[in-house]
Structures are given as C-alpha cells and as structure tokens.
Image (cartoon, rainbow, N blue to C red):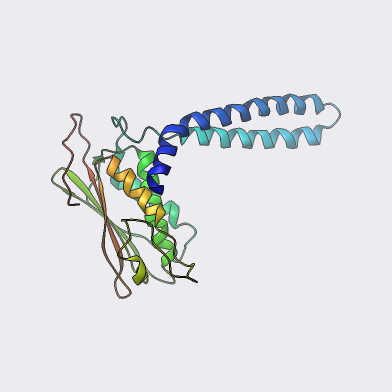
Length: 237
C-alpha cells in the first residue's frame, strides 16, 4: 500500500510540483542577480562571490528539470538502452565503494527495453544500492543481461551475507516486519516501489536466491521495445 501511494505521488504530482518550485527559485535567482549587479561598483568581491553562487544554483535547477519523470503508465517515447544504462548507472553508484569492482556480463548491445530511462534508473537504484551496502571488503557485484524471446532479463548478484532469515518470506511481497531491536535491515519498501515501477511497464521482479553462502540474486525482466507495441509478457503470480 505504501509503495502504491508513493507511485501515485510521483506519477501525478512530480512534474507540477517540480515546475512550481523551480520556477519560484528561478524568480528569486533573478532578484539576487540584480542585487549582485547593484553591488558591483562598491562591493566587487561580494558581488563576484554572489554571482558565482547564482551560477551554481542555476545549474542545479537545470539539472533538476532534466530529471523530470514521465507518467508511470502510457506510451514509452524514449526506450532504454539496457546494457549501456546498466554500465553507466552501476559504475555511478559504485563510486562510494572503491573496494567493489562491478563485473558485467552483458549480451544485449543496442537492445532497448520498453521503459523510459528515468524510470529505469529509479527502479534499479534501490536494488543495486542495497547490494553495495550489504557487501564488505572484496565482495563482487555481477550484473548480467540476456535476451529471452521478447524480453530482456537482468540479473543482479552480490556476494554479501544474504537477506536476514526473517525477511526472506516477505521480500518483494510486502513490508518486512523487523524483530524488536533490529535496525540494520530496512523494511523493503524501496524494492517494493521498484517492483511496482517494473510491473507498470509490463515487467517482473523476483528474488532468485539469498543465503549467507551465495549472497543474493535478483532477476528483473522487461519487454523488448519495438515500434509496434508488443503484447505484455505473462509472468507467474
């Protein structure tokens, strides 16, 4: 229920709220820019510092606007180049973990999935960040892709300690109920949101295996993009 609520919030309010807030900020920046110009003759140092700060803020606003999310459902106008995005995003999220070198086994060069790149990023971020946070030392993160009929199958496999025993039955099904006194593992809401994003694009998300000996393996399946819409693949409940 919480995941659905988040999806509704993002899908219906994101663009309106983002435009409203960034437009207001742009107006404030214009006023500050006039203030900086008026200070130039008598306070050139302060004026220069203020103008440099304004330039940085305008860059931030521009970047935020570029990250606007399209509707969760509807026609996909910009499909995702899967292998390219998997490499780019995984390397980006691995930067805070220099001891972890991702391993890629990708077999979908040039192949696109029927999901917008922005939603692909949102759906992948939590599972991959969870894997990185779970691993320590010289553990490995392996990302694979392959085409199976009209779908692209993406596997995320880490060599961490695996999910806690109490979390495995509820993982990707509902919020995980943590035992009293346990705060090292989340409630699984992030991956539930990822699951609903993928489902809204006729995709599938499942836990393949998780154990202390073999780590955790997740499987994501998405339809291949075609100019003519493909029928939604059928997955088991």
